[in-house]
Length: 111
Length: 113
Image 1 (cartoon, rainbow over the protein chains, first blue to last red):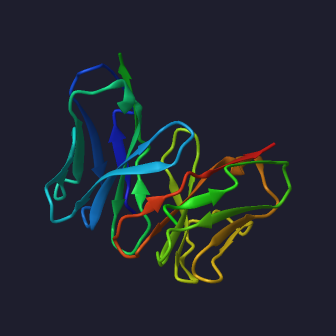
Image 2 (cartoon, rainbow over the protein chains, first blue to last red):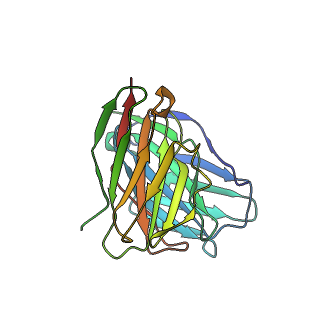
Image 3 (cartoon, each protein chain N blue to C red):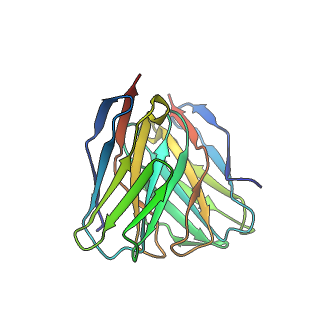
């Protein structure tokens, strides 16, 4: 059974700092991995999707990497801003199956 | 439509009552998913539709939970004899199927008193 773990559970950083969020998964037989953002009381917004054949994806200040063989992904946020404060969720897709999510990392960026 | 919509956004009910939660997927998406998210947790899978049929309902916690998608578009999640432990945010997502990106709705926050 696929399990996804996210570390740390919570993170507080000063504005402008670069930061890394970690995600690990137990079964490397995945099709893709997706990072989501969730604001309090809101739904999920997809940030980046990495196919299993890819090593990384970039969007603006965000960069996600994938090491499928070791079951790890990282989300790098450059020059963090208070507006980046949210919960970040990692989810893996093993094909024609539902997503398996981690519990998320709650990020606070302090002005 | 522009995105996945869910109604109602909030639902408060009393223990033992019946509730229905609705999901309108992105037009043309064949796959529809229901997830449940408890406080401080990631979403957990409930049921997945491909077209009109439930392709995987292994995540439904018990027989009080049921979902339909009669015309392959809108889906309704039905919960009978609600319990306080059913309180959570119920999220719906749709996609073109397979490993394609799933797009999530804003969720319905269910509170059972």
